[in-house]
Length: 302
Picture 1 (tube, one colour):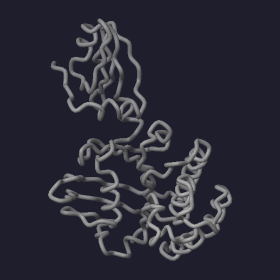
Picture 2: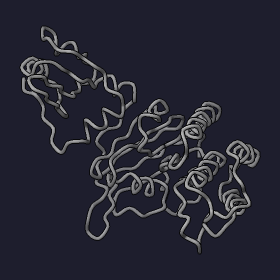
Picture 3: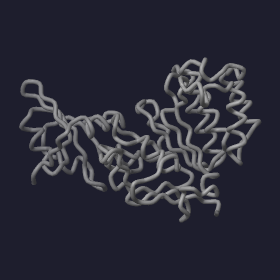
Picture 4: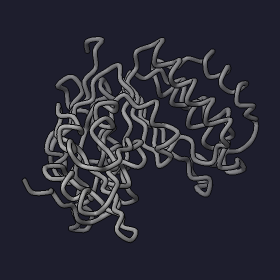
């Protein structure tokens, strides 16, 4: 395979018991970027990641790495790491191992494993490698998954809720490590997380899943630049929002706030000119709540 890795899924679907939990998802993940995968519980995030990494077979559709199928293809899988939460209750599986044994297995599994880096991370996190996985706290379990992900040196590295259980200091340390590693190596990272506000600065691109479907995939800065809160008297807000996509509204007396987006390439002031309203940009987390918090969405008329 060439040095540049492109992981692509086309018309990807997954059904469980006749229920479709992933519906015709099309994605292209290019090397050298940090992608943030966000969505509400049950949106299909973990299912998507498990299909991208051949942990789970698709009902239909395809997943390829540089044009080669990922499923049952060790050549492709050698380039991918999927680091997910360890179940400490699985005492007959991975949880029965000591940390050092678990990491030894990971070293054998990933051909690009960096043992010196793994040892550095163990020292940095203060992880006791003699402990059994089943005896670790939630935060320590997260440290193990992070060490596996980073030390794997896989060109495409996927982390599912990597900071669950970590305190704020450890989370900041992880974010810094990931940025340093990506800058140094040019690896691709996909991070699925519910802690959007903290991780937003990491994400070069955002993937938003909603009800098993791809709602959007955009450059983070460009996406955030299109979303605004428009506030003022209700009649002024309604007039200012004509032509904008309105995702959610809040009312208090005669005052109203509308959470809106512009079309790509257009500026918000093109729409609100001449109206007495206030503008406030939305953070990625507030954008997510606006888009996914309501079942309905209205597009103001022209």
